[in-house]
Image 1 (cartoon, helix red, strand yellow):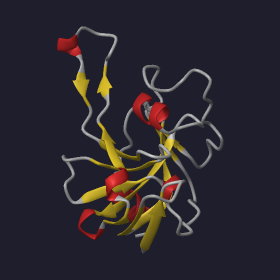
Image 2 (tube, rainbow, N blue to C red):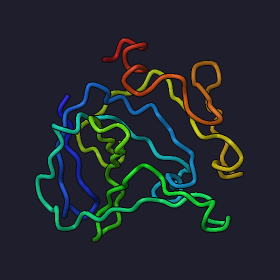
Image 3 (cartoon, rainbow, N blue to C red):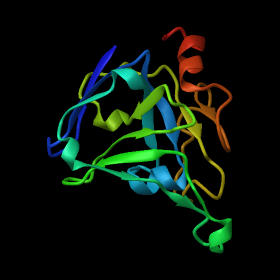
Image 4 (cartoon, rainbow, N blue to C red):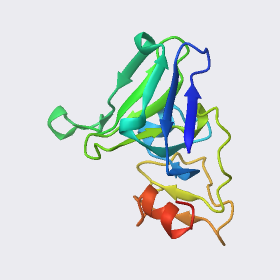
Length: 166
């Protein structure tokens, strides 16, 4: 599926191809929640990195790599593996890239302009006390949704395949 996306102010537009476009994956980690998640989480999808192209506005793209354990001494802090891409004009968080998975890029569902499929169920991850804010109660439908203290057992592509959506 071809996906077109953009930031709120329109300075940046991008396009990519995805075999995993269902926006089911909700991440509640502190980095996601604080960089974009007004509702306490972000929803990312997956796309082939080789298909990803910034159509215009590359000069407005800025990156951020979060530091974890900031409350600890510097030697115990560590940088995350996700390089987050934002619009420097309006602040929209658009996609991230993670070098450990070099074939993929992860657009945020909120940045996609193409109509996305409705997920049959959702996956809530990073629900541990160190990540999730105390005011969040993600248990909307425990009969069909999945909940994980850390990471789910299936990656995004495998989830799509297991649910007949690939």
